[in-house]
Length: 501
Image (cartoon, rainbow, N blue to C red):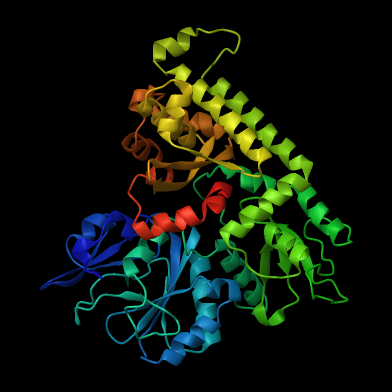
């Protein structure tokens, strides 16, 4: 197993551009740099990274414990809410201490990250340094990097064997993190601040997270945001749905409280979430719609795997007819926006504006209409995503493979679809796509910012330059070859990948 810096690839490094990096240079020690990407910095020596990006948003929260006491690590882990505890990653620093990490599914304001880190540290009652500690946070040595004093790599360890660096593969975990695995819910962090901070006069409410890069709502977001689903679940439990934010007696199995102890809310993706607040020792417990359905159906209250959530969504699609109508409505809306954006006249086979701009209108219309049919067929089988390689699309639409690939990527950049997985198997390599609800003004803004180029000019470099690295990375993230372990993981979880959770 190799953990040295000189073998690190881009998919084993931060997926954001840190506000600052620190590089250890022989003879000079740690030097802070703001002008280097992680990949450039790691070529110079071991690196430490800021939790914050260049917009001041935190991508991870961490605690540095240097006491050498395993009991301190376990105390801090136990101080986390149960759902976040499941996402905590621990590294052996390469010397005598440990770093405890919560990598977030979406970045949060630095102020909120600092609040949460302090709350957990104080509850644990252990001596530790927190990251971020302020808007000018120090950097923390990245997993896999060598300790400058001992020469030992920082490795992920199992919470049961805190001093054993050989049980886990650090490089594989880093690659899975890069692909979006093992990340903690931002909403759980903010809910914990609200729950615990409300008992302390000196803790403020979480700062608004409204300043962010626009992200299209996936069809999963749309369907799990339908109040008809909640009404269906509540009626199945023998209750009336009181409306968002209104408390009622918990409907989860084995919960027999007489007083109101639960409520429905929306998260920032628009999905409905179930807030169970009867467990005072756990603080705020949040369940997805699919986890509530599973609990009511089986009598078991627990967190679901992506595969299990995919199965539950399939059951919902069949049980609540309005969801299929909602999916068709999104397809119709997207078609209207797409045809308006490219000035497509549905009653004419020619269009002077399109021909002059060399847009490649036949590529866009044929690919989109084919995707529409595939999404509709998948819906009938209980799936909201489709496996579609560029070669498959090319053959179905009579296009070259490169034009099919560029068209798929353009549709993703503009917010009509999103790539949710990339798997390589025998005789097949391709992506899995999920339908998104396009936004007319955002699609128009992005198309204009790109310069309305012909299909032949659509590439990652153009998108990164005109729209930013994050948007480009979201579309082209499946370009790098997956490790064998991740291929096996994705293959085993095909139903979950097709759901796009």
